[in-house]
Image (cartoon, rainbow, N blue to C red; front, top):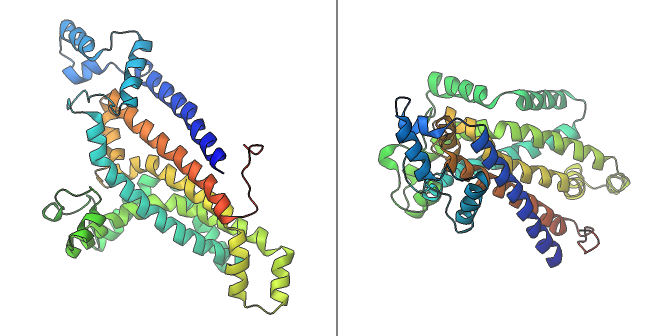
Amino acid sequence: MLLYFIKRLLMLIPVLFFVSVLVFLIMRVFSPDPATIVLGQHASLEKAEAWREQMGLNEPIITQYLNYMNGVLHGDFGVSYFTNAPVTGELLARLPATIELAVIAIIIASIAGVFFGIISAVKKNSIIDNFTMTTALIGVSMPVFWLGMLLIICFSGWLHWVPSGGRIDTLMRPMGGTGFYFYDTLVIGDYEAFFNALQHAALPAITLAGYSMAIITRMTRSSMLDVLHQDYIRTARAKGLSSWRVIFKHAFRNALLPIITVIGLQFGSLLSGAVLTETVFAWPGIGAYSVQCILRSDFPVIQGVVLIVAFVFVIMNLLVDLLYAALDPRVKYSQESV
């Protein structure tokens, strides 16, 4: 197990290296010149050239990449072209908001997806099954930004139940702390601010969870249907065990592995999928911030966001693999299986 973990951990290095090379080349080759965006269209050629020289953009691209990766390995993602602030600090200030939203979304998607998937499998070909699968199909097909706008119109515009954007009311924002508002408000005992943050997170979390919930529902149903037709399930029913005990103790436990895989991968994708959701709801995370930086060709910030998202995604893949051994004793990791 330890050997497998070490080898999988080392495999992350070439993956992240490839991602870093790809995004670096895209930013340098296919993006517009940031000098004209930063300095303005009317900036003189001398000023633009001096700015490029100051930022190291006139050096060979290989030299630029090596200098950039040397900084990344030391925790330095460079300096933003527009704010002149360290990218590391800019991202760390916004990362808690994105993580908090993604965690809430995956909790909603996992609970609802597993529940509806089990019900759909148990009630196969019934009205409930058809309705659930139709809803899941709509959830997979519906654009995130469109779902977000519909929720804003309905629950914020018409019903006035929850705010349409933002993360928390300005006067209730916890000062200092970790940047995770739910944790910070609970630690200081400010329950009014906690529920205010919960109201702000409701619509973006549901919007972000929509696609993942549909995927988890479909996977849960498929996995449960495969297990429910096994001989040991018929044997358990023949012994007189209750239906719910057969479903949850025998069927669901054996159908859990592919579901765990999907949940883990979906959590990694939620960080990248938060771009549209954060933009629609004015959520102050790295998703909305990266959109602003893309529009103004702020190379260092975009590269930092992509590397962080890629790192989280591959780490989630690794954690999912390790969970297999804990959930299924039949899975054995040996040198031959790597």
